[in-house]
Length: 158
Ligand SMILES: Nc1ncnc2c1ncn2[C@@H]1O[C@H](COP(=O)(O)OP(=O)(O)O)[C@@H](O)[C@H]1O
Ligand SMILES: [Mg+2]
Image 1 (tube, protein in one colour):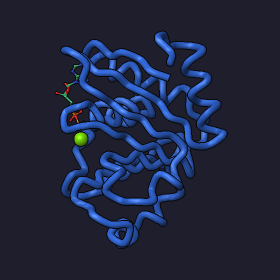
Image 2 (cartoon, rainbow, N blue to C red; image 1 turned 60 degrees about the vertical axis):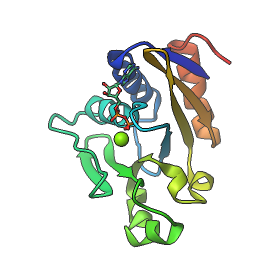
Image 3 (cartoon, rainbow, N blue to C red; image 1 turned 90 degrees about the vertical axis):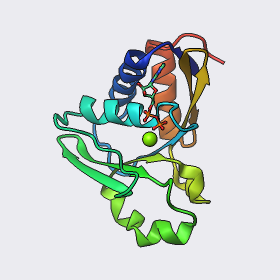
């Protein structure tokens, strides 16, 4: 599933669509956000967190590694692994304790093996002035989410 996002507003709208397609209880979900610097990973994460009801700022977790949000649909953990270089480091930062919520992970390839635990892998790419978003479901429940998005909102399937 692939969609062109012409501007930041489109990325934000897609974040809301994605949240709407996810189940009411977000606990235990892991969503990976891939893409180069500036591709829109944080923009998408911020949109999703705000769509889930968070009203304050959504600071980048580049230095803190994890920013937690306690929301009505459950906890969301915004994770940025840019500064992480191994699966061991991931454990030290308390990754395993984040399974009571939804983990949204930027730079997931910094921690090898993460993809095996993930539900959904999302890749954002530069395309002209805009971006392209691609969804790769990794679990059966994520496939249902991707199907719902493709059915309801998304044009330009692949
Ligand atoms: N679909 C889009 N088209 C053009 N620019 C976008 C789009 N989505 C987001 N942007 C812009 O691109 C930048 C993305 O930054 P950010 O979300 O921090 O990227 P990342 O976290 O991937 O490094 C922001 O300046 C944002 O305004
Ligand atoms: Mg970022």
